[in-house]
Image 1 (cartoon, rainbow, N blue to C red):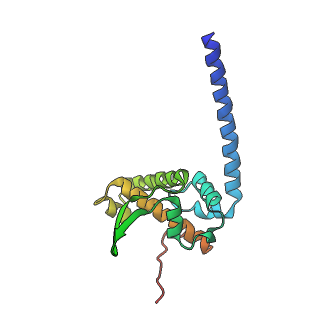
Image 2 (spheres, one colour; image 1 turned 90 degrees about the horizontal axis):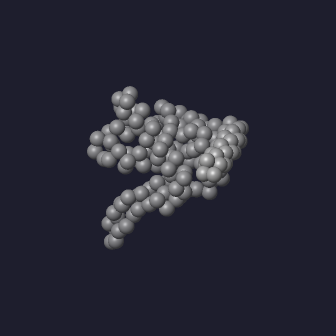
Image 3 (spheres, rainbow, N blue to C red; image 1 turned 90 degrees about the vertical axis):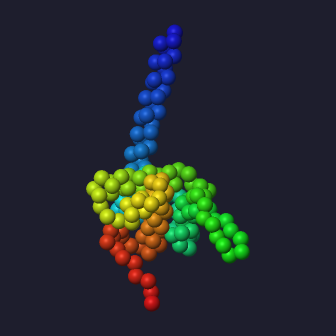
Amino acid sequence: MLFEFVHEQLQSIERLDEEIARLDQRINAWGRQNRACQTILAIPGIGMHTATAMVATIGDVHTFKSGRQLAAYLGLVPKQTGTGGKVWLGGISKRGDPYLRTLLIHGARVVLSHLRRKNQPGWPLTLAQRRPINVVAVAMANKMARTVWALLAHDRAYDRDYVPVRPA
């Protein structure tokens, strides 16, 4: 009797696995056809699930005035408190989309571990020398969100060697 119940539960788990695989294929097919997904897939740390979730969540990128607004919407900016013109920054606000924030932070952790293994110079490793590794991962996720906004808002392709130039 117990064996039959366990067997039924295993079959339902297998059916769920098959359903998840079918949905995953549909999401990947949509991501391959979507131009915005293809644009942000070039950013290190962003995979197909993150790209499709970003595009689906953002919708029209011009809803946000800047990359900082998008990062704040996702909950990747520090909580601000203060009085009398003095501002204190706390931990990340965690007020945005937890699923997308988690995907971005995990993607940033992967990039960070890759940089550490390859011992490549850059601001993340410099920051990691003086700040906890989770703080660095959130900072990288914040930068990834801002980069997504910039690429989509200005209709550009990702360039690893891009150097922003401030107008005079």
